[in-house]
Length: 445
Ligand SMILES: Nc1ncnc2c1ncn2[C@@H]1O[C@H](COP(=O)(O)OP(=O)(O)OP(=O)(O)O)[C@@H](O)[C@H]1O
Ligand SMILES: [Mg+2]
Image (cartoon, rainbow, N blue to C red; front, side, top):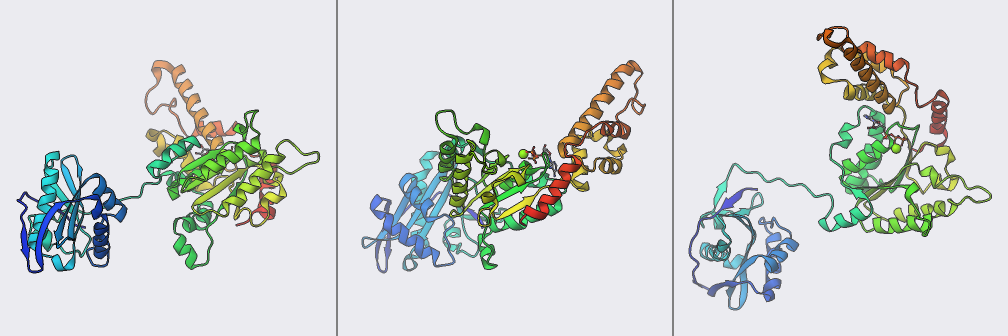
């Protein structure tokens, strides 16, 4: 899409074979004609760059001029000022009125209208293959050095207040890339969640129905929250976390407060809604019923409502998948029930590298650290790494003035291995065994 610029010229009246054309300011009554010209342009290679909504908004709020022949509007130019730069938002000339003179006069009139705003340049974006002659013959110069890029904003401005009310936020875009290793889990999430939601047309072609609700389960601290956030970041959808523990204030019941939050969330166009530790509000029903039973029922209704909506994904996470109410995991509620286990070797190395100071990274034996931290969670590794750093610093301080770079007071692999030997694994062997059992009996990939 080349960009084009204009110098200043006077506007004129024109005698045309089919009648006299004159240029005047846009009035509200001209809107239909501008819409017609926009659609005419749509059917040619001229493809308007700005949407019809943008163009009509600019007609009303910015600057527009029209060319009239025999009381019919045959051309229009619509512009918008951005500091010293003016943009032609739409320039449409009907086929039988195309001439350099009419175009020139129209663009000059627009420029005269906008010049008092302190503009120094008037720019036009044209689609590849669009006709440039009406512009280049009127003083616009093609800027060969420019390319046009854009990216979609994840949430419309009007949604930001709503998002704040429900405690939602837009996450940074790099979170997906930050999840190290865990290739199997990442591939599964990419194929089952991200791709069908991000490319619904492609999914439709293969008869894949985009998911509405998924359950992540696994031992504590293995990255369930991290993955939920990474999915939102990857989709570029806002992330809204609902905290079961904050539901209900003594006056409103937990169930009605949950319903209230989800009604608000329902107004968002897109969103990943995350409920961590969902077993707190969806554990097995008991007799006599527990106070959370009403919340469990409400949550079941919410999951059902989610299934009727496009563009929203509910992610629930739990450490105790076997404690969940059976109705909750029944087919037709959650599209997938996915295990998230302990970090693999690649993930452990990346987590180690996050905590080992860059200055000593070359001399540290990561292969041993990775091997010795098998079975630990990311949080356990963080604990061991910090402990090694603290111990080494204390040793250096005790050595006082004697310490020199390269001496045995420096932080080294030995410190990390020593810290590892006193780090208790969060996930016990029994927990790991139950997790593997849960994968067999409850996972749905
Ligand atoms: N694959 C990974 N790569 C890098 N860091 C990770 C990875 N997985 C988890 N972490 C880190 O480990 C910590 C714990 O992860 P997270 O809070 O997501 O676990 P969780 O399963 O939600 O835990 P819990 O069960 O306690 O809610 C976080 O600091 C996170 O950044
Ligand atoms: Mg968590």
